[in-house]
Length: 251
Image (cartoon, rainbow, N blue to C red):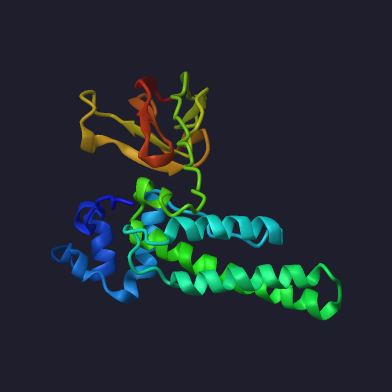
């Protein structure tokens, strides 16, 4: 089995993650990632990229053995994972132990079933540890992960942000206020309600209020003055859209 080239940490991690892991943006190298940081690094990589499944408790003994043998075959002499932990002899022994316990439990008896359950639990612990090793070593590289024969976690599809179709702006008489309400749109996680009195709408002239609801009322405005309002919609994965500006005179 030919190894697949792994990307170095400095090609994977943005500065913010390197700073979190090492305390310095200047230490963006593989050597700078300490053993203490490996668990955090694995979680970050798994969030950003691919990972394998490490949950096996729900499987019957027969299915667990089938999956374990398949993983063993994929990991044995796999040059992408040259130092597996636990090692392959340990995995094979645990597989054979569970198979023997399963055969013995078929004859009945509480002791035999208890031994089978214990052997199943031990194999699950080893598979989980091996899966964590695979996730850490592969650094989220899906082609490398696939060579392990672990099942891959399906990537979540990003929610597409659909912009609002209309921004309603009203000013009730004698209220010194403007009320905004967004119509339409989907995949929206949050809103930024904004107003400005600058006709050029300079970037630094906007007054902004973050919100999770579609409606917002700006209070204590100047009656008879024209305000320009707009709405920024925030989606997942940093998506955003800005509505067309709407101008109103405060009543």
